Image 1 (spheres, helix red, strand yellow):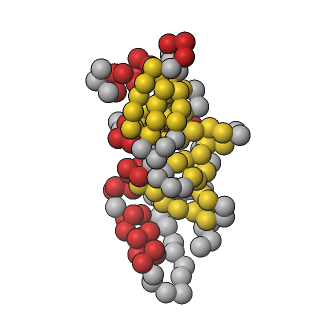
Image 2 (image 1 turned 60 degrees about the horizontal axis):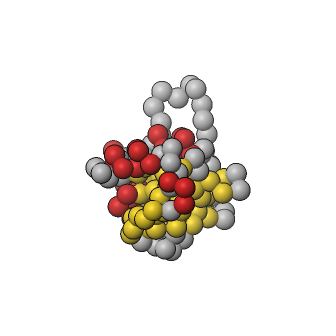
Length: 146
């Protein structure tokens, strides 16, 4: 599906126009998401030339790699064109930053264990592992009510 975005300062209220040759399930879902107030629980990501809308609840981790923000789910990875701090501003309380380059979904944590030099090690339910840096450890513990 081809997507065009037009940004104009003359527009007082955002609106979307969808051009299609048939009303498919995906088109209906997109309309529903755009019309609902719950769209803040969704995030647009890319995989190759495809664009997908993910629910925040299905996202395990955001991590900066090779100067781009990668979004990890149970079995896939995507790219988002926002900077990590912009992503962080749009997330709910289920997410916490664990390092300069990583934000994780607290509900997707499998285990946390001590690591080297005062850091903590984290493993998510999809098998992805990372370190919690000392700088972000107090915020992480507070998010877990420890």
